[in-house]
Image (cartoon, rainbow over all chains, first blue to last red; front, side):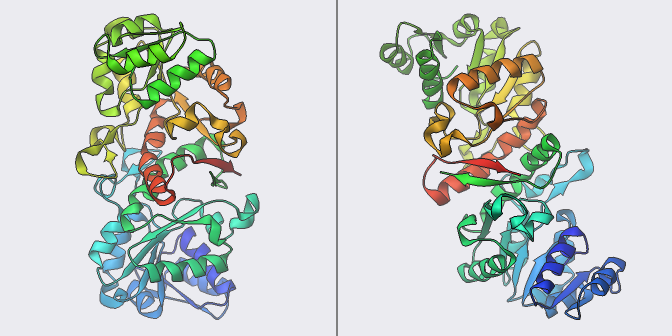
Amino acid sequence: MGTGMVGDAIGSKLISLGHSVMMGSRTKNNEKALAFVSKNSDNASEGTFAEAARFGEIIFNCTKGEHSLDALKSAGDALNGKILVDIANPLDFSQGMPPTLLPALSNSNSLGEEIQKAFPDTKVVKTLNTMWNGLMVNPNLIGNGDHINYICGNDADAKSKVISILNEVGWKKENILDLGDISAARGTEGYLPLWLRIYGATGSGAFNFKLVK
Amino acid sequence: MGTGMVGDAIGSKLISLGHSVMMGSRTKNNEKALAFVSKNSDNASEGTFAEAARFGEIIFNCTKGEHSLDALKSAGDALNGKILVDIANPLDFSQGMPPTLLPALSNSNSLGEEIQKAFPDTKVVKTLNTMWNGLMVNPNLIGNGDHINYICGNDADAKSKVISILNEVGWKKENILDLGDISAARGTEGYLPLWLRIYGATGSGAFNFKLVK
């Protein structure tokens, strides 16, 4: 779900690993979705959010945080029973740069929780939202891949399945930290303002952190 | 300023390095401040917030975030012209555990900024607020001391002086990341909810992060 850089990066990586991916967008024949299909193998297709939700066993929310709930709602009940991997962050660009968080989706709430509330029959798993998209799909780009990725969600089996996919992508088990239920999304989404400041100070998005204990 | 664990840790460390420290509290002869004086050398003393502000060349705000502005205001104009190292976080324990951030001091604002606004003639430097107090004064406790400490503030000279003190305490220059002006406190304070979740998941506060690029 989503035709931006995150959706393109995740979708292309999954196809390169042998999975079939339908890129979902608001309308059929979206220009970026067609480009995604043409540059990838026969395992790539495109359709509306609802078609993508029906197609996928596991759905990746790669829409912009401010539009995620509307986009997912347009998929209707096709998300019921599915695992939804939520990678979006509720950034608010309306107050200038760097963005803040959307007030209603921050501090004592989060986008991950709000999605879980809106889709009680969907298993929402939040992960990969604390880094640049180039690292999401290629952790070995820096530090031998030894840097952290958080995961949270209410369903242990869904988290386990998502961890298997993360392992395929190159994330080592020891670098994936389970923070508990979906309310931990308040923490990982709330880290974005710090991420943006570090990006501003270092001038590159190709950074992450290794847990030191 | 502050008689809790952070104030005790910072004050005792600075005394061990040869500095003179007056621990400030709301009232004179505070029980914890007297204990601090009796366990440390002759370089330790105690007094009101106003007395401590007059005494110090550099003031450390180690009060609880929810009380910081009131505590500092009780010091009056004694803070004018001084460097104030703000270590506090605006945690809100009124909504249960883990704490959230005080809404008025989060997202598009921060405690660091609010202190700077309240004391325009004071040079506010935010640092050390992203870790357990045991690490603040002893970074070598984990990972050979190679993990990150952020600093921000509007005055370059004040940041430089605080970095010198951090070096004395054991923080290597290459592990101190300058995030820019005091508005970056939105980022470092906003990281606390994630810190608290990691603490919950790992069961120990003795952790921090090494920047991987």
